[in-house]
Length: 341
Ligand SMILES: *Cc1c(COP(=O)(O)O)cnc(C)c1O
Image: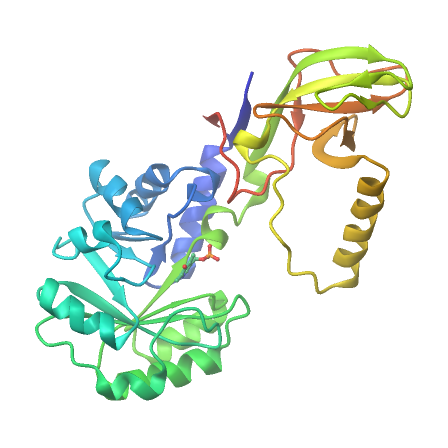
């Protein structure tokens, strides 16, 4: 009755090991839904890799890893703000490294937790968080424990940008430079030019970098023959052609068919949106479930835990209990179970 993530454990771990070997001072990122695997699992794997620092998104995620027994350091990636009581409560914890990205916050932080371990985030071409490089001369860390500089680059991270920012920062104050989103080769060059005083945070390429070692499967829960024009589902939409309603596990509660806005730059991606739009306009929407080798249309929008799929023709191609592939966005899907094979 489940939506499940199947992991070929040995091969997945082999990928993790190789990736970790290719990146000097790797900092695994475990945040959100744990890239589908859950953050506690990622913490265990980080430990298996012999790495004693992990990065999380927010303070609450750090709390959960501490509760689960994580013994190493935890970098909280979202910069500290006075409005987050959980983040404030963790400031003095010796395992926690907080990130500060505004001079005002630094003033507040110095008073609140003078012994806190902090990284200073520098603004990059991302323009998300970070102190403008022109302001770093105004930094007054006082007694705070300085853990280095944080540089968060766009997905297409440029070595030149990382190097320029890191050099300027190092001139102000020597410390480690924690970067993200450089490719492995660019990062190697970066690490070499800073004599190993660098670290790279990676989530996606580490945990999801070998797609052939994971499979996402839904279970067929019911199969009903249906005639063209018959009404089905909550919305009583009429079925466009004779065939079958196949009910599969996986619905909105799992994050099925919840699409985030995409960065639609390529013609191919935009054409895909047009095709989906045309299907939507006809009252049908392509589902992420594959039945008989093809993605099939939803009979109606997904329910909380299951979805109704329309399979046209005289053969439903599946029976109750079968597992069918489902395409999941790993950062928005909550699986009922993870099967370690
Ligand atoms: C999420 C995050 C990362 C990891 O991003 P991936 O694309 O999953 O590798 C690295 N650095 C920061 C600051 C982040 O927020």
